[in-house]
Structures are given as C-alpha cells and as structure tokens.
Length: 341
Image (cartoon, rainbow, N blue to C red; front, side, top):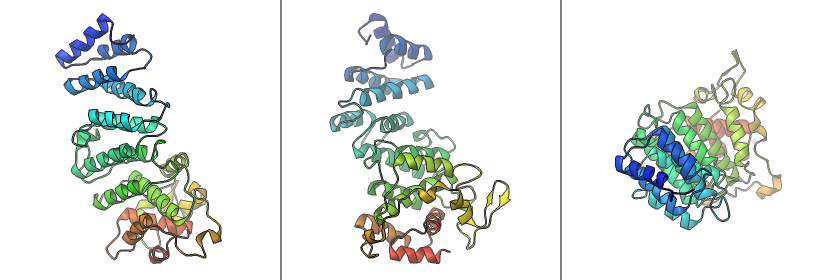
C-alpha cells in the first residue's frame, strides 16, 4: 500500500510529532503500510527519520526497523543479495556518525544485512567488528545491549556478536578469514581482560586465528558453514572447549568430560572432535620442500606468537590446538608450539 494512504500517513506523522512508537503503531505499519515487507528508498528514509526522532519505543519497533530495512538493502538490491557501493554509502550516511555506529539497533541492522546478503563491501564488516571492539574496550553497554558488560571483558553476548559477523555469508572472503578480520580479533584479545576469559570467546579466537594461520600456511580453510558446525560442537557443555580454556596454562593438562576424567587434553579435544577433519592437509610437495610460503599478512601473527613476553590464555589455547592437530606451520612458530607442551 505504501505511505500514500491517509490513515497510514497520519500514523507516521503522529509518531514523528509525539516521538513515541507503540506496538499498535508497529502493527499498522506491518499490516497497512508495508504488508509485503517491500520498501522503497524514499520510504526507508522515512523510517530512518522516525528512528532519529523517536524517544520512547518498544522492542517490536526495533525488530520491525531492522527487518524491513534489511529487506530494503538486500532483497531490493540488483542483483538480489548484492549490496552495492552506492547503497553502502547511503546506509552509512544514515547509521554512522563520524564513521561510528551510535547504538545497538544500528549494529543489529548492520549484522542482519551481513547475514542476509550474498555480498557486501568489506568496510561494512569491518565497521561491525570495530563497533564491537570499541564497545568492549570502552565499556559501552548500550552499544551491544548488555547491561552486564564490564569494560575490557568479552562475555557471551559480545562473543556471539563477533561470531555472527565473522561467519556471515557476505564476508569479503567467505572461504577464509581476511587479514583485517584477523588483526581486529587478535588486537581485541591482547587488549581485553586476561583475568576473566569467556569460554565462548576462546572458541571464537581459536577457530578464527587457527583458520587464518593454516590458510597462510597453505592449508585449504573450511567454508564458514563448516566453521559454524565446528563452533556449535565446541560450545557443547560436555565436549569441546569446556575444560579446555582452564587447562591450557598447565604443562600436562587434565580435563573432565561428561563427569569423568580423561587422560589429557588431546583426547578431549581431538578424539571425538570434528576439528581433526576440518582442514584438508596439502600434499608434501605443495609446500615447496617444506619451505614456508608465509606472506607478510601471515608473518605478523607468527612474530606476535613468537615474542618473549607472556602469551594470553587464548594465545596458549591456540598453540595447544595447533600442537594437537600436528599441523605443519611456520618453523619459528613450530618451535614455540613444542615449547608449550
């Protein structure tokens, strides 16, 4: 029906005047204004305007706002699912202030687009990751809708947001982790609280950084859909990363699984794990006689992990994972892995 009908237009005018949107208002918009979920750019401009002036809203409005604007950017794109540079610039002009997202609704809209689209310009993905990083390190609770957020601490909600961005189908490299992604995740870990390490965050860090390292080493990285399945396994209470994070700091870790003790972390983390088959090892001659083919994009991470300063708990977890998998990584890094036993 669009916004030309008198009653719907009156509803939108009243929302703008009173700066309040109710559940009833959202129902009118769903049933009378945009019943098919299709919305034009001029109509989307109206929603952005309402969002900027509304001071008292409801959860239904947030959901509607994210849903219909995602449809506008993704479903109305040509070709469908491919967000253009022009549309990206248009979106940024409405959701970003001085290159930063001001709130949780804008972040949710951005992540929703990343998840629904086939392809988006890489800068949108980086904008989402930078927003989450800034929220964690700055303690900006409203930015990630987590009132329990402690400055510098990555908990389940923040780790879940990072996972959604990193595993989105529209990422710049849907088959691997990009250099920009790896740098952001690594820097976030280095600057976050090392006294309180969330198991979900350890899972994300180990999966992302091992995928990046192995890809740089010449391994074929798994597709993101495969990483999602691995991530699900890692977060099961009786398997995966439970007990893993607390065990990586000791020389011969013992872990518990399903109420019984197993011999060592290798048994817990590889015997029943899909990680063992996650990466396809190349033939021996693919490495050019065992010589490293690391690019500068991979060398920076090797240099970081080989530093003399203490490693973070998640860095130690990464080394344990690489040792367990017996992957053929950079020679300098292999020495560090051997020393971590």
